Image (cartoon, rainbow, N blue to C red; front, side, top):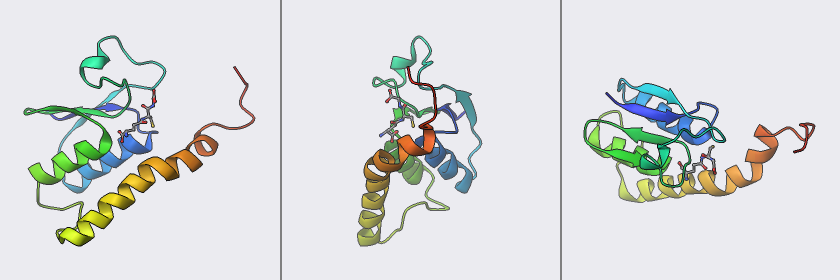
Length: 118
Ligand SMILES: N[C@@H](CCC(=O)N[C@@H](CS)C(=O)NCC(=O)O)C(=O)O
């Protein structure tokens, strides 16, 4: 069985779930939330982040690595362009979204400024 570990609120988890949906791969989502990481999770993700992933061949972490694996293992219903130039540009956009856009929008989007401090 293909299992994704994480919480669907996370954009990184949603990226992996979207790839699985596009490729029509059956999976189960095991709920793991940042701040409540279960004991032993380090074996799935040494940085204790979400998502991580497991199937019959491999255990992986990092959404981009997982999506690249899915793209290569299940080439139909492609999630990246086949053209190498367009693919390189798409991977850069993915990295830009994962680093810069999340850095700018992540906190205001997910953490209300009116939340209690602490
Ligand atoms: N580069 C990683 C980023 C994953 C990430 O930062 N996930 C967040 C949730 S949206 C997390 O687990 N944060 C907890 C932490 O940084 O300790 C990926 O693409 O999977």
